[in-house]
Length: 101
Image (cartoon, rainbow, N blue to C red; front, side, top):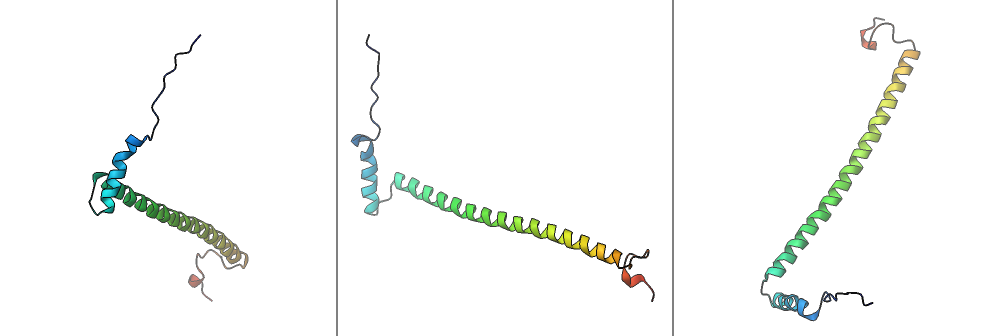
């Protein structure tokens, strides 16, 4: 038995890369081509994406520091309130400035 096989053409044969080589040579001589324009757009887009990734990373770091500081402030406030109450300063007045001595 012989299996029915199909032979597919190779990708990247010399004929398919010819327009690229031609456009590349023109670009080197200073002649703008459509393919060169697409490559420039791709480069600019990639550069913007890299900048956005850096910016997002910085924002994530800032937000993580903010959450950490927020938790530390809550803990410090809880400790301050417990010390304030344990010292006997909270006799019905919400603030020490409201008490008469």
